[in-house]
Length: 122
Image (cartoon, rainbow, N blue to C red):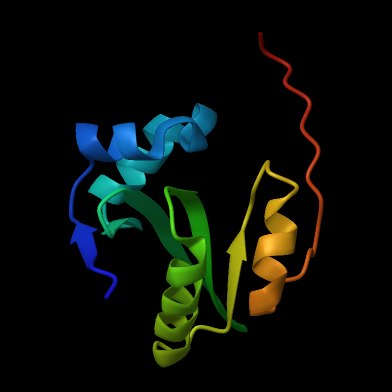
């Protein structure tokens, strides 16, 4: 049975758990967790998940901001089922790992965009 624990505030353990998935957005994401805009979760013993719920006039979308750890095949169905029970319209995540597409397509995810970035500050 997968244990899921909500972590109410940013912590060193969460930062260590999410590691490089935070990228340059570490400070902003930590602030969003502390202000209740985003939610931080520990799944099992070594997996961390950071989510945010985006709401618009036409619906809502669960945004998986960061996920790092093990057990994607155990975690994905739980996330999907919880989102359905809450009446959320869709789930979105961004990744820098092209191979993840193959893993998540079995749950119905499809690629909807590609993002290209040009850093203008060194």
